[in-house]
Length: 300
Image (cartoon, rainbow, N blue to C red):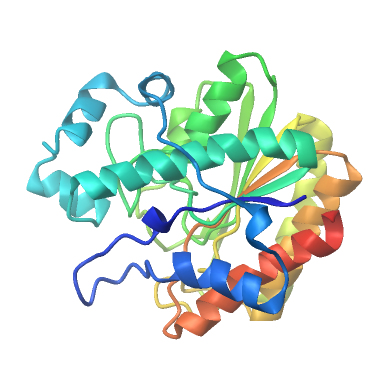
């Protein structure tokens, strides 16, 4: 059964005209249930992440400021969010959701978090709509408890997973792979274990060629025991922040390839949703929903 982390607290109220589309977190489950791709039984509600798991990745000094709502105005601007207790609670639930999904993936081969993919969060700070790094926390938990010993992060959001790359820069057990826009945020990139930077306007053919030529080689060399897949749909040509030129079908083919190669190699996969900022919310929801539709088709 496809297990999906979701909570009504994912849909956090933000000021009007905020460019982060929180409404997608409620619309995606509604659409998937309406069309019959999933049912209520597929969803589970994560609890709050433990402080022990937070501090396995993030510095105590940062966590103290975050939980006590002591981030400076400058620090809040870098996150892109006005800080609140509700927002911190949301982040704890989302991060626990990705950790839970890792365990479900080991059982069912594939699991999803409707949110997550907070790859811009560093050990000591938040950036780019990210406060805690959910993939890093889940990965570290798997390593610390000796559940797994080799992890591959496949980050196909249009923005480089800079926080994840930095957190694991000296950790040989976690291999970070990112395909992202060369000239997009963050302007100062970190060094992943393998980065592919694409020029503005890159379309389906060039994007899929880069993915298909490199991911199989990485799987062969890394031999991961699990994949964390950041499936942002901000690669679409309609995306306001993306600057690439993929069609919705190209995005679907990207997901299909990642799922099929994980399936063929018998590697569990955890999917975090990442970004999506198209003008029409329907484009965002449909592109994300395609990822779930493919998972059901390929795995279940």
